Length: 156
Image (cartoon, rainbow, N blue to C red; front, side):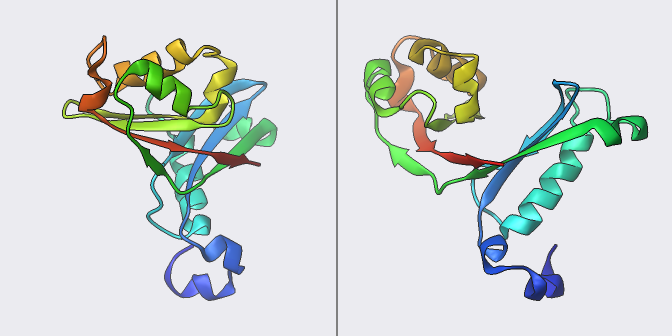
């Protein structure tokens, strides 16, 4: 939904917002795709990410026979907020379990983790450690060498 079609989209869906779309079949994740930083209207973001989730390279592509039982979760990302932790303890204090997701960029990589991941990674140590490892942030207290952002989601 881009260009001339945007005139028919309600204002809330025309606003620039980021989203993540997750597809499940019988409770199993079948694909997920999204962005953390808003780069287009929410309607376009959801359409693009739903399409990309169908062909998530980490999983077998979704087959036509699965479409009837497919469940979709749309996570709308709040504007991201830069935070400036100097240590992992400070970072943990800046993230509320279940509420905040995190985006981290370092010279070696970039990674994000949605707030929904708190259900699986229940401690701050595990939540921060997992995203730091994905972004190749040095273990120990390499926190201050990376750029950290937090955000919230509305899930539908």
